[in-house]
Length: 226
Image 1 (tube, rainbow, N blue to C red):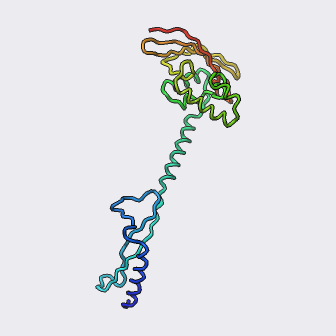
Image 2 (cartoon, one colour):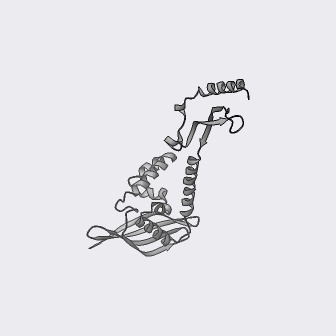
Image 3 (cartoon, rainbow, N blue to C red):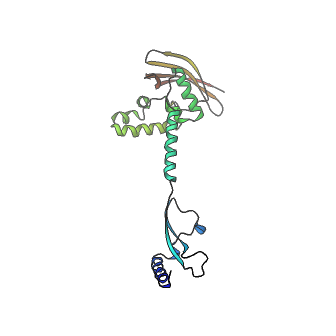
């Protein structure tokens, strides 16, 4: 290539580089890997002519690289997949009424709230609660959803005499059920610092499809022991 052509190419390269200063370019060695979505510039050297020629002219040019990382997409996918797996794992199964009560009490004793609420029909249970009942009955559909969420959080507060009060132990005493209704009588123990209190719970269940759900309960004190 003659010297005039080389001069023209070098001039064009100079004008092109003038639009981007060296300080504006992304330095991998200094800053590490670019952020999740980034556009960065760096300089590379190229040569023209035969390899090894003393008259080779180095042309410095800009290279635009777009780095699009699928990190966010992968993370969202993992969260969604985990949610689907949880739903499958916690899918309400066909159990007898006494098995449902055992499942709920065991979940509460282990602090597994998702399992605890799995067989409890909150829409029915809330109607027996003096704190939430009136507000729930008067609310529209959207507001009812919000109140149910409040009620659910309230049950997690471990209030005395609520169905969610943390038990120390229990014993199923009696189970009765017809085609669509059932009741399970259970002695539930609660441990305090220096004594154990016993309560007699009667859980009322209804059948939806092939699955039994707790809809209400009654509780009676049986006294305490040291």
